[in-house]
Amino acid sequence: MRNVRVDEVDALDRAVLAIGTDYPPGHLLPYHEHRRAQVLYAATGVMELATAQGTWTVPTDRAVLIPAGTRHQVTMLKVSTRSLYIEPAAVPWFPGHCRVVEVSALLRELLLAAVDMAPRYPEHGRNAALVDLLLHELAHLAPLPLDIPLPADPRLRRLCETFLRSPDIHDPPARWAAALSVSERTLGRRFRSATGLSFAQWRRRACIVHSLRHLAAGVPVTRIAVELGYDSPAAFTTAFRALLGRPPSAYRSEAPPVSREPRQQEGRWSSCGKRDFHWSGSTPSGWVAQRRS
Image (cartoon, rainbow, N blue to C red; front, side, top):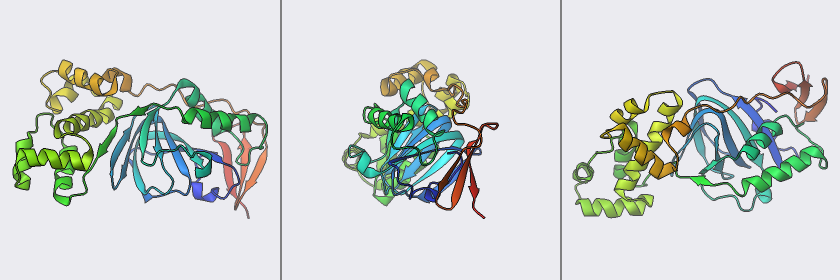
């Protein structure tokens, strides 16, 4: 399915629904939640997801796991997504909090193929086997430290949010402590209690995660390093590798093309809810939703 709202097909009696969606640059999906668990994959572009607990940045060719019932918003930066909406009972292992994950080459191909399935795919056969393999692969994904936890304390949270708008790797904890009228030691205790990270760890992660949208946009590493306050591009690259295990060049938007030749036959129809879905093999849109008259 392509460019279809999940609430229009949510009642379909299948464990997994796969939907591909293309978003205009800078598009914001305001706060919402889903009954199903969601796997949100960035085929192109960068996504920035936010909940009350923090933010998650999802670079090209990575995905974020969103538990069922999690209220969230997403900013789409030149993004084409492939989403799986999964009945919670089918993924009892699903994490209780949002998590950014690596996507293997096999999983990527499965995600791209899944959106070409009929909405009510047969419960036995190729498509059912594809869904089973998808669920198996999803259970073994490597997490990425691309979340920025935010404290519940309003004053400390405001300082964090201000920092995230213009991060500086050398921003001193003394400035934060003074703003809160506490000692640096007290700040450190509060920070670790609220975020699970030390102040230095949180600051370093925030800077590296901030760089991802600029890397995807093609901004040179030297310029990014300067804007974040690093002493040199080499210092930035070292910090980047220490967090993510790969150099900044691995996070530039160079994902392979996401289009593929449809496998279905021209003129096939499938019904669901208040819409019919027509497979048009002559266009790249795949299953096209048409409201019944």
